[in-house]
Image (cartoon, rainbow, N blue to C red; front, side):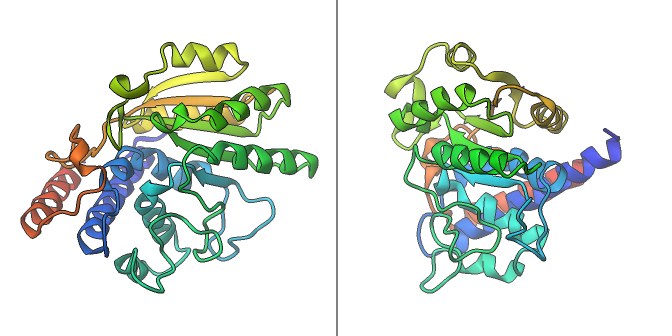
Length: 279
């Protein structure tokens, strides 16, 4: 890919991070900035490079679908949809407010561009698999993507879909595991670590690609490979940093759902402006 396109995507990811920080400061309640920031580069690559979507026709039958299974990270989805043109950016100031179309978790009946209501962890991959099955039967070229947290995949329902998808040869399905190594109550390793996670997905029949989830070139390459792969679904294991892009949020699980003070907000905005100037 040309360097100009990579830079364009990196700049968009920075813009989305600024939106996430803005949402975190202005939302009526905790908006989970940490887990949103960890998957920002991935969501940016999906909406601004990989996915076939049309903001003018959100329900286009052959559109690609994204299920944000870790639905609490929805500020990253809302920002991407707004930046793409699915709804006015002004809506981003209404997250979690009464009667807002942008709830604390994605709601497909309220928000244009949201393909699946999520937030009850563990259910997203099953929904994505159902979509993939339907699209296969329709002979649609559409792809289905599902972003899961590495804490979330402790849920048993996830593994039912992990088992089923390869058996059904759902090569139009890509699962992306956001491996930021933290979950709401602490470190994944301390709570319920799954040893040999990559090998487990491979053993169950998935095509597995491991990447740095903040390297735009690696993300794009993995998404391109997943789309081209035939015969089985793909799982992208993306190693990420919770709170990526804001120094005091990185690796700090307090920012799973903390609301920034005015001083913290100003510092985060300043850091993201500086990063933008360096890109």
